[in-house]
Image (cartoon, rainbow, N blue to C red; front, top):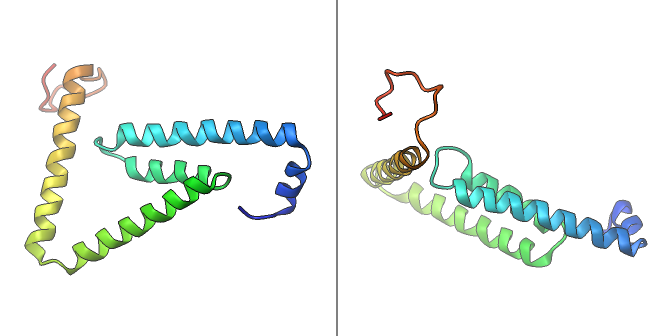
Length: 125
């Protein structure tokens, strides 16, 4: 929570500061929620969660602590995986790809295959 000129200016205007924190909290929470929903789908699910936490951490100490904890866990996981044998890394990669594929199939089954998908793609219609 830096004490930039912008924050000092905003802090001097209490109603505006409360509105700003409320809007930032709502937007950050929405970004985190969108990221959590999209984690099992192909794409930047975790990156979206971290971006939402980053937004929240600019104003809320609890979000800053959670972001720090998340960064430590991701770093520890990455380092652990990097120390493993090749077959473990391949197994984790295949398990992750299988999970993402299964989640995508379930979502397509529940929502239907979009009309823009070419007919030769091996999905049911």
